[in-house]
Length: 299
Ligand code: NAD
Image (spheres, rainbow, N blue to C red):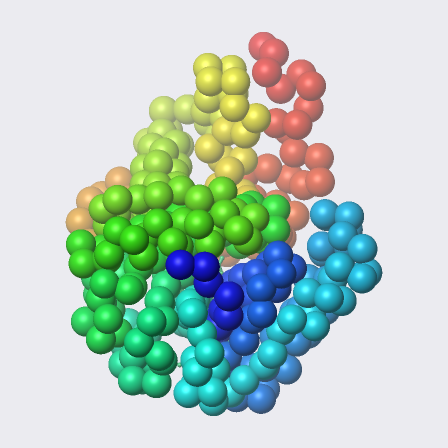
């Protein structure tokens, strides 16, 4: 099926980006959020996105104005869903909020409407029943700064209809994404299934005092030809996020190395305002980090 009318529910950081990208690619998009204040914030975000698209993608003023013109804003869920072929959910990462949302949406959306969740850490099977249409529900997961980092992980739960899965893959491509199908549910999708253990392994080498930051990164960069080592990547992700992940693991497992690592990230980095690239310092200092020095990969 060709989706024509798209509704994006939740117009925060990701929802605004998804809505603008979808409109930029020619679809009519209804943006739904809970109140006028949230909608006003989203409209501000859209203005910034227009600038980003012109700067980063060399889009013309006419292109971004046309994209904005294809957006409609709505605070009534039944109105927002009435014409939708596809509803993309990007509301807070809170199970109770999402469950209630899907129950309400399932009641007001037309029977043919497909629902997808952009959730980063929750699995679609957790909400499949609440939607009232498990076969027309799956995950469509975007990355932040969608117009540049254009991945779309498309993930089934066991009850998703294969035809719906294929249609959503087609839609992801139609809005300029590289579609990455996942045939089974996987916490963390593909990227974080690879990245989280990789970054943890690097952090454990540091906390166990096996090797220092720059040696670990140098090893990875020379050994694999990668442009960034794990600590440079951690600076991009942000040390706050890394700390949250490590702390959760420490709490869940009680493992001493993770407890020590969480403490180290807190006292040596976060408490000192070293949050990563966004604060100008993390494992490296920006804008001229040591790993970008041409001599970094030499002895
Ligand atoms: P956000 O906090 O920026 O935005 C959430 C929006 O949802 C807000 O505008 C809020 O008003 C609205 N909202 C709250 N309750 C609602 C409801 N019941 N119905 C409709 N809208 C409601 O959050 P975000 O960072 O955009 O994340 C949204 C989702 O996208 C989460 O599931 C998150 O895991 C996922 N995600 C986020 C990122 C990221 O980098 N921020 C990346 C990939 C996926």
